[in-house]
Image (cartoon, rainbow, N blue to C red):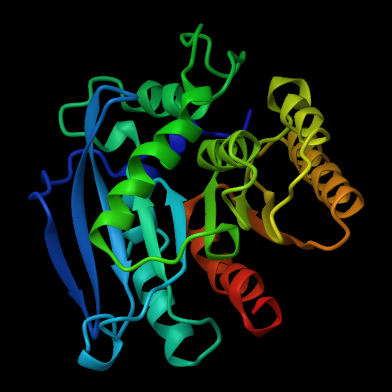
Length: 294
């Protein structure tokens, strides 16, 4: 299988310091606010990281509202050692490659202070059905993830920040199991999200059930970016299986929603890690939110 469990350190960095409630971190003229969310869905408490673009706090922008892009595995997405999303967003917005937006990183259960089994806890929230890749998880709770995002995370963000509503202003994405959770959320709440990012997402799991269920989707995101490397694992056969499944999903999206823009990036030599996702993030964001999608 793709090395999901072994990649945990690049996804959650266990052992990091506990986060203060509602902390703010300066990144040049943009800023990152770290909120605390007590989840009724999963009965735990996690950090939710919010990137506010440059100018958000200026006097002339105080009435302006912004689109929102939600990303799973928030700690890794916002860490300089992970995806380095704040730095990449600063650069893309400064170059006007993408418009100003709010980006929300949702920490996974493994990032919670005191987590006893981080790999299992993360998989438990992200996977919708049991799978042989996680033999200790007989009843994962991933089908609850769409409700968690739409009814807990999104209201928290809309109460605290000046957001735009509607699918044209709302997107979601993730990598690996986090990509599975993102697709499950789109399938569960199809009229909520207009953009979707899937990085190194193992759609071959569950006997490709997520691809089959996507056939029933009537409202597709208007823009979908999919990325995968040719060295996700040392098993060449499994690399081919994983890429083939993503290619079938992309073909299905193009067939069922010809009005959607869909991009597949297959990167030679790229592995299943945060460095690969960081490298692909500028291109994915530009494709999803650049001038062509406005």
